[in-house]
Length: 233
Length: 233
DNA sequence: TGTGACATAAACGTCGTACTTTTTGTTCCC
DNA sequence: GGGAACAAAAAGTACGACGTTTATGTCACA
Image 1 (spheres, rainbow over the protein chains, first blue to last red):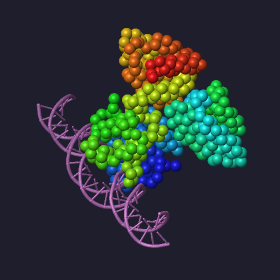
Image 2 (image 1 turned 90 degrees about the vertical axis):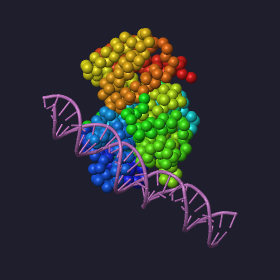
Image 3 (image 1 turned 180 degrees about the horizontal axis):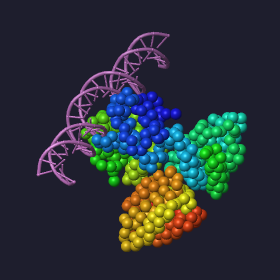
Image 4 (image 1 turned 90 degrees about the horizontal axis):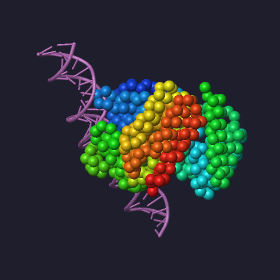
């Protein structure tokens, strides 16, 4: 689950980003480009490009004569999907999952309301199809298949909202759902109530019932938060 | 309103980012690193670092033998404050402002509700101070002073929510408010109703009234959206 | 004529080195 | 003791060379 294909740049970036997100380099620590080049056995050019990217994410700050300083968490671009992935792989995944789930609970109901007004017939059809897929995979340890449909479902709602900022949150939601499924105690099948809510949400959107769509999505979010409370410390 | 201090890297990055965000290079267009180096009169090293950063923002995609391709808008990291700034400076500022305002209308009410529960006494005090500052600058063409207090106000609410994702949206809100004030027809003073709502919101948070805080913030958001409808095409 | 293997070249990817600039710590002198 | 000149450290920039991938054109062969 790294960034993309091979490439020295990618490897160094991913490793460093992961380490910083995990807290292996506490804020204030300075890294030297030469050291990094030596450590990864790459040229300084590669390291510099990585540092520049990390800097654009506000994970580090590069200053002459002092080095590359790790910045405090408050400065990080926490909406960058890459950063989210790194953090979800790290130690404070629970805290992170909670933050993101609260974010979802704020955004998705509004997005669903908009989707009920703006969704195209194709989107409605796709939504129903996803809901059916969730039903079909909701029993018998088919968590991967369920996850896939769940992600697609929420992505469609966000896209159908017609708002670009909402739409682009699809990746974040995907990360959250995947993180929840993969890194948490989830022996059992998904909550049947959640499945039902998704089916009814698809209906509400199709019927253009914005109020119902918003309410149903809120219920889904509340359920997700409750699930976190139960399963996470 | 560029990125930071001087530096070749910064200049090239800012120029290119601005151009791409403005649509000067339509999606699919390919840029060659050599050409860019020549155009900006810098070494290929600098250009490569810029491209890597642009690539991490998903504004471009670099492939061997083909060049650096501009990616479609849907791929961009639109939550990156840098990208937001570039886009707000460009042609489709109206659309952008609307998207961001809708986003605010989803997030801030929830954040305000949480703030009412979690705000520290210091945050409550700071909030009241900001509200008073808004009142003081709400008449007599003191738009800049008003803007400053407005930004601080919303930033405090987002921070006081205790949710990291909300807190990090402070920069986005700041950009929106600044963009609205600077780039829009705003001869008159701010809407008096909005000022009142802010004062009452500060009170609600101080009193820990989450429901009222959420409702008041919703009203502020509705007002902002309405203002956009009236002033924007 | 169509298809597949192969050669070619274009662009990025990586490297090493040398030089410049800025910041900071230190030393020396008043 | 304080301030100014100086020295060193680390990032910033430049340049040139070579490696690697891959789109594309060509040629042979059926």
